[in-house]
Length: 158
Ligand code: HEM
Image (cartoon, rainbow, N blue to C red; front, side):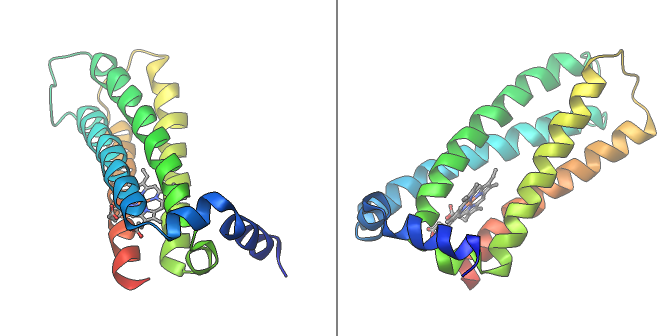
């Protein structure tokens, strides 16, 4: 048994996971909160990266737009990670061995790393809109959107 199997079996056996799995109301409420969380993440990522690309609000300094948008991403991430873990807890073995779910988690790690590591380095200096900055913003945006698509694909094909 791998460490992942042990973890899945443990989380599925918790009372919390069993209570969630037995209640349509709990699943529906958590799903609703998950939607709010990931809409905030993807919406804020859209605003931040479109500004880096110079598509929206080009007259405002980039950090004046991207700093509040990053806070939106952080708050939305907290909500989507907590609700996501609860939603997955009762079917962890099936989800963790599902390639779409694995892809979704990989895209989540890549998106967060690109958005925060790269953007932090930009906010420290005075950034002129350059082609590499626009390209990185485009890549970050594509990864966030891919993550949302993987989320939808997971419920369709799980
Ligand atoms: C910003 C990050 C995330 C995005 C953009 C995202 C996106 C989505 C989307 C579009 C759906 C399908 C529609 C829905 O049921 O609401 C979904 C469902 C789901 N997500 Fe996420 N998600 C994120 C984070 C997470 C995390 C961290 C987990 C778990 C560790 C997770 C677990 C799930 C599960 C289990 C479902 C299916 C819910 C069900 O069975 O009804 N998500 N997600």
